[in-house]
Image: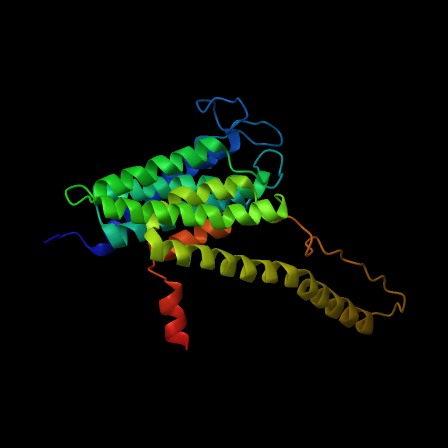
Length: 289
């Protein structure tokens, strides 16, 4: 029996995730730029090298209030989010798989998927290298989990699941001529569908659109809610002001139905819901009905 308390394990795993997330930020920023990973970290605005006390994951961002100590320019919130997400992912994987080789394989896969998510959000493209890395992790996972009880029927089932997911997203890409989703999303569906199998791949495809719909509706609604809050605040200020000619600024909507939205983040979230949280569409619908 382990004599160490559970919170101790969570802390160790979480700190490990933070360290990996901090390094991941460097990899994402310098990926496909020709810059070496060995260079020192610096402010993206003024180029000032960061001191040792500015390199602590999460803590440095909080204490610096999200701004460079030298020039005062804002530090991208991406750094904070990637570090915290990697730590959360590490803890979730530990909860389900503990200290095992399988947990290491899945964490490696999660790191690659996180890179794909961030890269797709910023550049609207999924590099082939990351798709290959995902495929390698999927093959490693299947090889490890099926070792000793591998069967040809199991291989056929998982290959059909991968082909089905690939075909579905491929049809969407073909019909829309790349306007709805990119071909990188189609290629990403292959290894993810292969890992999940037929039932999981079906839930993965459906959930990716459900997640996309919820997020897109939220983003579409945000400008309206924000404009309403601004109007109410300005209206209140006008009532309390002695000047009757208060200027009302118009806030444009930055996101419309015709805006391009990266689809890989929805696919990654859907995959994690099925793979880590065992969320299956048919069971969910049966429960609701």
